[in-house]
Length: 343
Ligand code: NDP
Image (tube, rainbow, N blue to C red; front, side):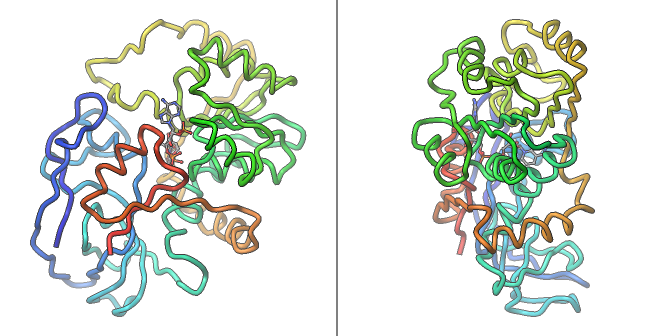
């Protein structure tokens, strides 16, 4: 089998030398285990964090270890009573052509319910993240204003579409005119701003103030950086911020890393705004909440089937091209959910 290993820890943005495409022995399934041929694998921003050896909510990938990730594959051999050859399943198989896991760690997919790639995006972890973070911590109410960046990705587009369906004014932020067009025309955002057009938080704030005349009630945080700086002064009393990600800062490393000061210190102003506006800022890690996954599937699954939630996927070809697709996604080169077709 083939796999992509972490060759070394990145310094700043990942580069091709941080990854290694190599042969590995084909695993033999033990008691209760299932061997799968991977068909499609997911590329997600959290994988950047796994490449650093810093304190976080999950252990880092060891140097020389297989890059972590979710994938869908076809069962080849099964020692589990719940799977048979030919079944399609989702599991954390990693960046590899094959995976071997206990049957209880896999989720069987029914291909008659739609494209199996949906289990990696709109009806998988990222879609669930958007739905859960918005409904649980955003607590959207009709007539309110919501802002979300990375608006055309699988998390942001879910947030925008669910918020729109619940009667909010929905403002997206995305990189480039083409993505902004996609956000409005395909995902139904009321308006979308191109963050590349604004030099800093001040300019971002001025642009947001124009399109959010009643202030901002929910900021679904995906990116940090100048977007966060622009948003904070516009937040209303009682505003909510589900803190989901901060991709513009991922290359700075995690807690306890050497470089932990991203420029000018805005901490006092940020802290004061949270107090004065009695804001609710709630960080969450979706893996803590999978007990709600069935509720998500029963609400959003039918919406996807009826076309009420639009799906946008960006599929790269070949496991060997996964590092390039990953680096591209971290810089915003993806149009929708980034997937790799492995076989
Ligand atoms: P996307 O498919 O949206 O890909 C990431 C996007 O981030 C890029 O396409 C780019 O979009 C945007 N981006 C990259 N750099 C910057 C920057 N400097 N400033 C602004 N935007 C930038 O990713 P997902 O939808 O999968 O994930 C979105 C966020 O949700 C991420 O932060 C991710 O880590 C987080 N997440 C958190 C989870 C949790 O459990 N808390 C679970 C899943 C995801 P553009 O070109 O439009 O700027």
